Image (tube, rainbow, N blue to C red; front, side, top):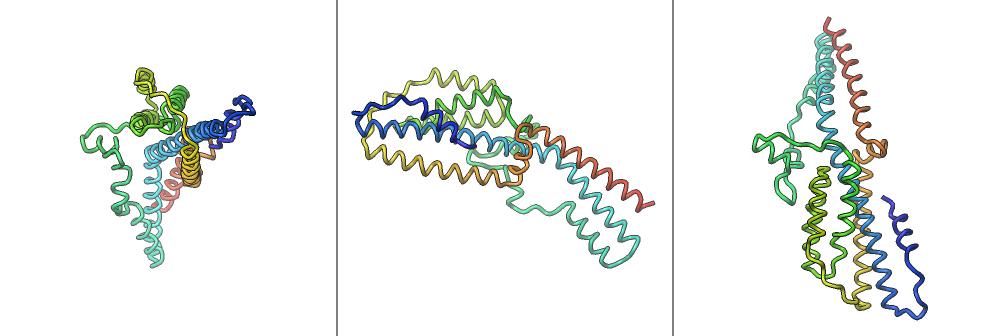
Length: 277
């Protein structure tokens, strides 16, 4: 999520400014460069956020049953040992292992990922209507979906608006773009691209005053700090750390973890079989 490359590319593409250029024009150009760099950074952060979210969901969907099986086997092994020895310490460990199999969920866990700013999540709505849940098909959306998303984000980003109404229109549109990208829905992204191209052309921007440009630069700096904090939070999370183990092929990482868990299940089953004979 390093934006230095994007910043360098943007700055390098700028023509040498004339020596008699007004200070306001130089400031406005600096704002444009900062805006583009921020957009590229935000695209990178959002792309990684989608991968973290998808990896988390697929991790739970594909590996959750294996973890549950391991917990059950650990409980049975502990119970078998306790039954053999009758030792109070073994009995205590068996009780703890059994209690860990089906812990009572807390309120936060019950509603985690069910409700967000847009209301019920797709998973929650599917459960409540007895519809099939449609999880993401893969951690990282396909290359074409990523290309469409980046193109739309660069064109329709709210930070490019100067009027409040235009900003709101862009924010609503980008929300739809983000949702389509999170699902890897290439067809919908193409429809959104066509919709944007056919949409109203924003009014020509008037030259900003120096005070407005300085305020804009300050806002961009604050926005970048916020995105940097979000990026750090994602990278330092457990799922983010796992993704860094296989940045090129996170889906393969899930398969490797599944293979490791399957081997552990086999070991536990063999151990249990030896105890109950």
